[in-house]
Image 1 (tube, helix red, strand yellow):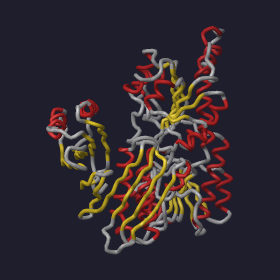
Image 2 (cartoon, one colour):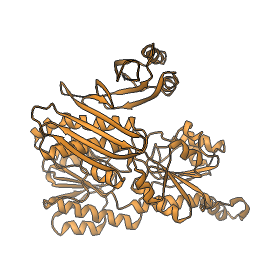
Image 3 (cartoon, one colour):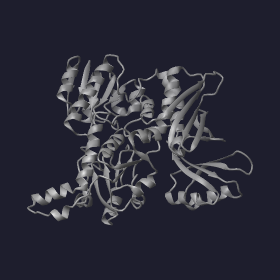
Image 4 (cartoon, helix red, strand yellow):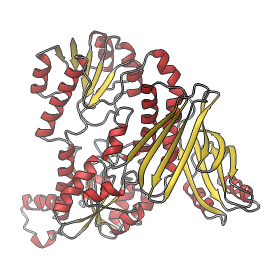
Length: 527
């Protein structure tokens, strides 16, 4: 078969591929050139620069595989590939060690002023007294995101004699205990950590995770390290916190815009900068290349890959029939994540309706994807969702009601350290709807911006909530109310045209009748 390699790949990997297939290594192709030649190839191997979008995949009439030599698949339209039966693979584990070691290296360099001391000495100065550093021993490291890389950073920090705490609601207490890490809330982490290291995925869910409000709550004199994704830290707010001596320093390997051009960032001596090299080691480069080469050989030989990012597609008819239920399952998972209280321990997924085994497995995986997608530094997808849950110490239970007369639906039950949560959903005129939240029976579309609030029973609760939203300029698309009994608690769910501003959320939470208020953002219907 013919394999196109559009970006640099380890020579040993190219040689391995060439033993069995025709390999065409062509770097620097323009998007138009790539679209022109892609119909000739059975497999495409890329790194991060090549954009494997829907337009390209529509031209790839013979393509069976897209292999990404790295962790993320942000440059690949995985949904479009899956619809066309194209397998997507990556190398998710090969640079975990490299990123973890770079994180510790930046922590040490930041603590001992290595870069500034080096520059001073090269400038002909001998300023020992100006570069007195601090030790990692006995300090507290706060890890935001205890996935694969976060876990490896924790192991190394413990070897330095640090105390390690972590904020990640999607890691079980048992898993954290195995790592020797104490789970805390994000607020507690920021208030107590001498070092804060970020290990969360990029995207809308984590953009601006550390902004001005969060940086105002950090322990004075803390240091911040980001080897995760650009945009997770509000760089302007970080520079303001450093200028105010709230934050002692920062080390950044990733940036909101790469390369960074902010003159204030580039001029700040208390910020240590590296050009997105966290995963760039000779060992990682070789291992990534060989891993994707072996994956490509397996897929082209008809064997299952070790690191699939998607599943081989169902038949077009099966795929189209299942898509609304897959959307329902994933959206229930997103809602469950948004309403989660406490640390997650176990997940139960019950499929309702006459589905064959493979579609049932896909529906359970879609629910896990929605629940876990923002909790791991790497893609959570229909193939690896169960494995991600297992690595995070979460127990999974699957069941089904195979009744042909039963309306298609899904139930999602979560066991946490605070108790249990339960969601039920189904399709109404083909649109995913939430039908039950814990003991509250309702019916509302699982789409757009949803505002959830539990309130103590009383007069004027609805009018109070709608008044706060109206005064804040927030438009309401629907209101759903549910209660267990007269005079008891009630659940209110409102559909909003736009995201609820933070001051409006704060005002809603301050209402005397409010027990809790949370917002969940879902795609619009059809997205």
